[in-house]
Image (cartoon, rainbow, N blue to C red; front, side):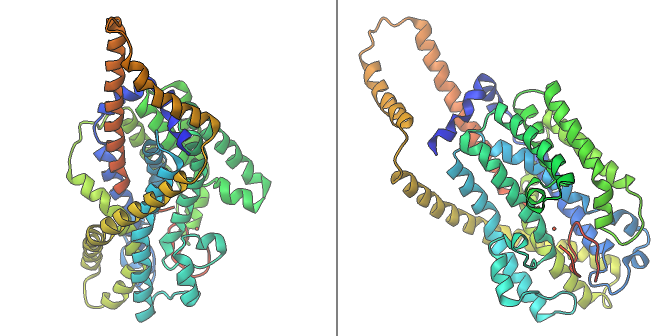
Length: 443
């Protein structure tokens, strides 16, 4: 899979110039904001552990909290941007290692904690499917197998996982500007066609409700890496229109009340505007390092907060004033998220990354190279010997080009290290009485 590193050939000088761009701390902040929107939705807009309609418990807050599920859409938008950014110049093996080591360790621990809590105190939620269902959840493929999620938010992880699989096609052949645009175009056409095709398998992979956000995120990153063009703005505009088209269904899926759709439309539009400003470099001056820590809490917060928080709500609702209880739960979950990130996610991810890299190296070592790759390797090995016998009278402009190429490689290496930092900061649907982001509380 070494050929996938050819992705930089379509970047050239512009890619090297972008290497000096600062870290996008604002993305970390936007991720945390999206997570808190989802938490707000679960704790204030759903019955959860309150035992009654939250509209009567929080008559004012409920009006805003009922649209907090749009944080999931923002997650997907950011994911398209970050995944495209972090895969540039990487092999398929590198992509698999980075994604698996990023999303699975915290997820495994969250399953154990959530299953333990709802088993000991099943008043609000129960583990459907028993022990076998819990084991199936460890694969993160339970939605595709028709198995209940241990926690309601896990449905989004399957959406995210399918996006990784689809984008892996681009990574396997080398990520380039042209291939990313082609990927966006093909996925958009297939997603639109799947709405009327009524083919379950096609709809499962095309994901028409969420595809516009991933595609727009990819287009936004291409703007950031190169420059905004009419083509990229066209992709973003089309994605926005498709996203707005599906908002009515998303609103219906997330509430049992008859509420207007326009606030959700506004939130999605504002999210697109913010991503456009990020893509144009408007927030590059924001270099608040604490946002990096805030962004790192997003994933564990998302994994832990729902069923555990609802169980705690049930236990404490008659002892603590409701507003203080919500604030306390949010702070408690942020603290738990930090503990999981510091003592679980970081060490386990590091260990899993080392194990997987060793496995990938074993695969490459025992896999025969294609003829083209073998020839390229021989040419690369022969290059130093050839340069050793070059006469000292080589024109100065050639030496200058070699030095310039060396500087470009250094800048590219720095860019790869910078982009790798974003991977320390994931999410991505069923019926019944589960409370999930994207579905109403039918308990």
